[in-house]
Length: 112
Length: 112
Image (cartoon, rainbow over all chains, first blue to last red; front, side, top):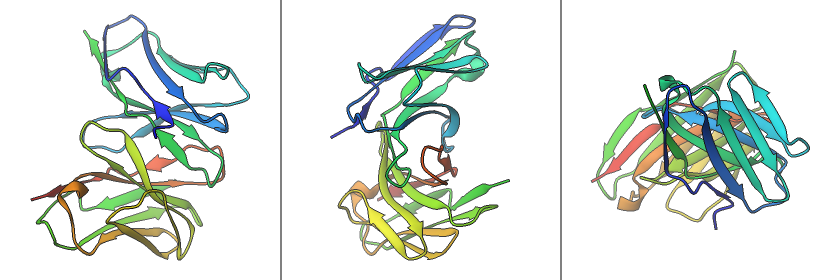
């Protein structure tokens, strides 16, 4: 049973516009949420995180929003750049030996 | 700074052959260590985690096993590989709770 779901397998956005990647989770015990970026044949790279006690965290062009009542989080990238084209994974967890459960990923394509 | 190494990067093995994938971490001590698998078109599935030497916890029943013979060494093994063991295997390390995990570059395993 998947505890973290990313229902959009792909997203295409024009350069300079906003990219919004969505993620839903089922486990209300998750303490912490992560977003990773992954290029082909490489391991995921940590991008941004948010604690369950916050509803927003911002780092440069990247902002993560958390809606605990809806068990939903989203990653906003503004403005999107072609170099942002990659697969993005969200993950929830953090407690219980710092284990995380990952979604299936969303492939973002930013068109020049 | 901390680094994580995985090898080999690519491996092609016949069905029924044994497997040994190795992961080592540098620049930190007593890390939590994790093995994940990404099957084709799927997300990252947590296979094993370890919080110390000789301590292994399995997340899912499977044909694989893990061992941690040294503090910063994590090994994924199988006695007889199945076709379903194909995938992209990732090792990650982490520290205390509610902290991001950091991934190696992975091993692409193909079973023929």
